[in-house]
Length: 479
Image (cartoon, rainbow, N blue to C red; front, side, top):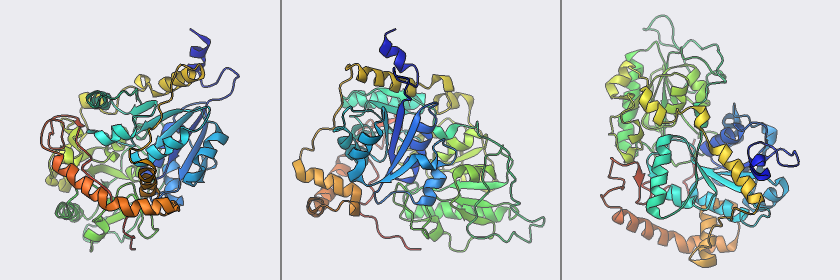
């Protein structure tokens, strides 16, 4: 073993200095993932930079995202995009984790490419990543290490990169939300009175108490998603299912767990066109909305219902049974093919009757519940640090955009919105937005129905462009 290899096996460099790990994130789910990932590494110096974009978390969202991750509030900085390069030069991290949507990852890495010495760049996605999507791979292809969270995801992204003719080192990690070592009992609130004919007088927005708990609650917790189901008619149908579940047993709550508070002006990673707060106008007294952290909602849960949310994995890790609703089909377009064969698929009738289920052991081993000892990402990151210090690891720089300076300005403006105050960005957005609409329309036509497309539900990858596109400029939220 060389001296450089020896350095790579520990959390200190040859001078006895702690390795430094820094993360960059903006939106809610990405902040939560970055904090949990870097917080899981023992005996390192941790830093997290939250970059100002239109999707940046509120202070309250930040507090909830950091809870239980090992990243303290004093380890977090809020910075403008223009400060990224200087921030990295001052902190001088050995490893940088870029946790953001693909376009922001590309912008951040361009800034890091100018830093000397350049840190090892690690990327990943904050939740279930089946199917492995073309855009997720190509936006992150210039990183040094791509973190996945299951054996199945590792196979899928390896196949995807191979078919795209690209190279990428993949590292296996335990999904940060699939840990239960912090479990502790909590006092659960009484969800309903003794007499069903006198339903509990519950406010519309309820925040369960903090802490983890062994599942013994009574709530049906629904993990709402911005994208899935997509059509308004389907979201209306799902809303009716939740109302029916509440009415079926007035002694127990149905908790609709939301990611962002409209009254606080908060945003979430993806744009939601039809919110459940709008769709459920006159809920039964025992149907409530909550913005509490998911782990707090699960502390009060009898079971969790979702279509395809990563919250299902968090629930499974705590022993909370799940229903992955199959009412709208098991298909890539619903991002729920990962649950095929899991044993947790269920119908609307199962939801109303609260027939929650636990996943099979075989499915768990291949999907997010491999042994902790089998996680390799941090050992790989340390080896990459050692190789870079020895001059054996070439930097994987992000190439300049094919459209030159105007294209680069558009990429920046489309991600940063009003936080990009350059004239070139405004000009590029005005010129590029109509062109982008034409390109996206053309891509949809070319999407096709062949192998490895969104229409092919028998594979775990998509070679065709992303199915869902958020608007470049989101409409203003109304309370």
